[in-house]
Length: 185
Image 1 (cartoon, rainbow, N blue to C red):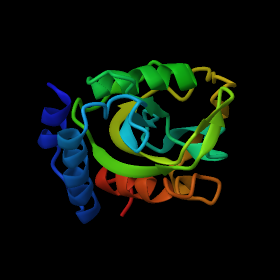
Image 2 (image 1 turned 45 degrees about the vertical axis):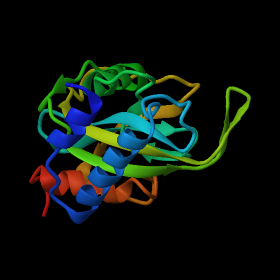
Image 3 (image 1 turned 90 degrees about the horizontal axis):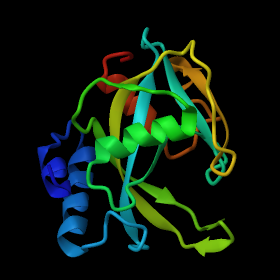
Image 4 (image 1 turned 30 degrees about the vertical axis):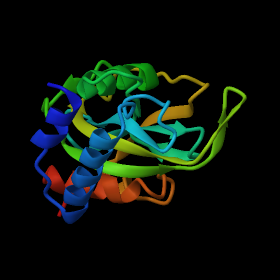
């Protein structure tokens, strides 16, 4: 399924998702480089909301750029199979071989990225057109992280998923995912 088909297949459940779906489709129709960082205004990323088997905890990485905890994910970097990108990012960022619970995109979000320096180069502020998939991993398995991207990885109780230590713009996404999963009202 190509990128546009993946976004068209996504069924919004909130006004935010409906607006972001329109936004994502406009970007796809307007630019031919939305899967790469060559598009400095907005490009696709794929992320994972990873639950433990009891569905009481989520996996979070302490992201260097955001200086806060956030779910694992990363740039599509030209790959149109966003689920594969999300699975790869979970493995790279946490060391976990996560089980995909649903092959479809669970939620979408346009997320701000502040200007920053990466590998010695200035990266201007831009937007991530983020697709989130739901996965599961064993919270008893050892965790690992890549120091060039994060300062740590850990399991977080779902009750803490919207705490102040989470990235400020990601807390509403955490709340939305938890609610959509029926894990909290």
